[in-house]
Amino acid sequence: MWIIILLVIVLFLLWNITLVGYKDRAVHPIESDESKVFDPKARSITITNEGNTRAILIVHGFPSTPSIYTYSSAVFAEAGLDVYVPLLPGFGTSPDEFVKTTFTQWFDSLCRTYERLRGEYETLYVLGTSMGGMMTLKIGETYCNGPMAPDKLVSIAAPVVFNSPRDGIITDWRQYFLRTLALFTPAIKAGVKPGSAEGEDGSKDWCGYSGLFLRPGLSLVHAMRRVRKELGLITCPLFVIHDRGDRTVPFGNCEIIEAEHKSRDFRILKTEMPPFNHTRHALLMYHSVQKELTETILAFLFEKEHTDDKA
Image (cartoon, rainbow, N blue to C red; front, side):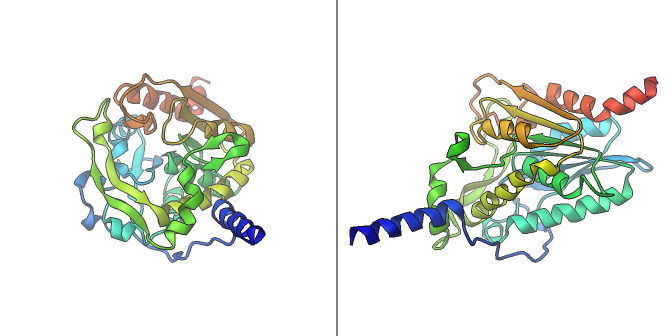
C-alpha cells in the first residue's frame, strides 16, 4: 500500500513539474479589442512619421500593458524611430477574457505584427521586458536565420526557466502545483491593477492585472522550455539587460541566456538598482534608471549606423 501511495505522489509531482503531455488548448488566432481596455493607459502605443524607414517593435510583459514604455517610446520616436507597442490579445481588458487565452495566441499575434512591420521597414528592431523579453528572444529564434531577420534585439529581464533546481533558480514553489490547481480554476483573486499612488520611482505608472492567473501562467511556463532549448538559434545582434536584485524574474535567467545564445554581436548589462519599494524588474518604467537605460539601448541600436556615418 505504501509503495502505491509513494508512486502516486511521485507521478503527481512529475506531472506537475515536467508538464509532460501539456499543450495549449486555445491556439486559434485572436486580435486585441482595445475598445474594452480597463484603463486608457493600457492601449497600444504607435508613433510614426511619414517616410521613415526605421522602426522598433516593443513587447510588454505578463500581465502588464504598453504603459510601462510611455517614457521610452517617446525617446525612441524623438531619436528617429517609428514606435509600435501593441497590446497583446487578452491583456488590458478583462481577467475573464484573459484566462481564455494562451502563449501560443499571444506570440502568434506578435509574429503577425512583426512580419507586417518587417515588410514595411528597411530596419526593424525588437525590444521586450519580462515575458516580452522572452518573446523577443523567441522572435530571434524564429527569424534570425531567414530573410525576415530582425536587425537587433533587446531583451530585458526575460525568463527562460521558472523553477530549475539544476540552475539554482526557484521563481515560485507554487508552480509545482500549478497544473493541478488549473484543472479546477483558471485564476485566483483575479482583478485589474492600475499603478498605486504610493508606488516609488515610477512604479505607480504600472497598469495591468492582479491576482494569480493559473491557466495563462501555465501556458507561459510551458513556453519557456522551448525558448531556452532554442537559444542557440539566436544569431542576430542581441543586448540583454537584467538587474541583479530582480524580485520577479531571478537574475540567473540572464546568465543562462548569456551562456547559451549564439549571437554574432552580444552585449550584456547587469544593473544593480538601489532598494526601492518595487521589484526592480520593469526597468524602463523606473524614473531613476529609465533615461540612462533608454540612451544606452539607443547607442546599441544605432552603433553601426553611427560608425558607418563616420567612415
